[in-house]
Amino acid sequence: MPNPPFVHESSYVDDDVVLGQDTKVWHFCHIQRGARIGERCSLGQNVNVGNNVRIGNGVRIQNNVSIYEGVELEDNVFCGPSCVFTNVTTPRAHFPVGGVYARTLIREGASLGANSTVVCGHTVGRSALIAAGAVVTHNVPDYALMAGVPARRIGWVCECGKRLDDTLQCACGRHYRLLAPEQLQQVSE
Image (cartoon, rainbow, N blue to C red; front, side, top):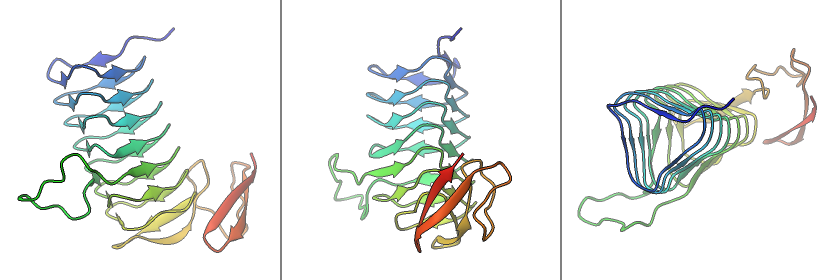
């Protein structure tokens, strides 16, 4: 049976926020007006969710992550400790953008490693894996394994998270095929 959302007493949840069933908001978080957070999510210590942010079901956000307006996380996304999102391509303190933010989309099942950065205006593909400390400066294909500064594709990963070898077959039983040099497709589960 689903449980109502849990919000630690040290956290702030503004008006007009939706928290799904079984979602947990831990210490020192701030969920801002208009945010929509799905079911079975976990927000670790010191997470900030900006105005009007959309977060899907089953998302795990580790400590010290800020998800700014303009960023959307689909279902089952993992955000490692202290990963970074931006929402303005050319920020200036004396020329505020006035609510015009670049859209960033993190697709279903993607994982962002600790201290990784996703520069705004890009999409991280389905089940992609961004290595710790990597800096994403362009769109990331589905199932891509990305590392470095700037991040580049160094391989492919299965939906289950294991790195794929040249056969593109995973020990879990899933099989993939290349459709183009930078496009992988799952062909069986």
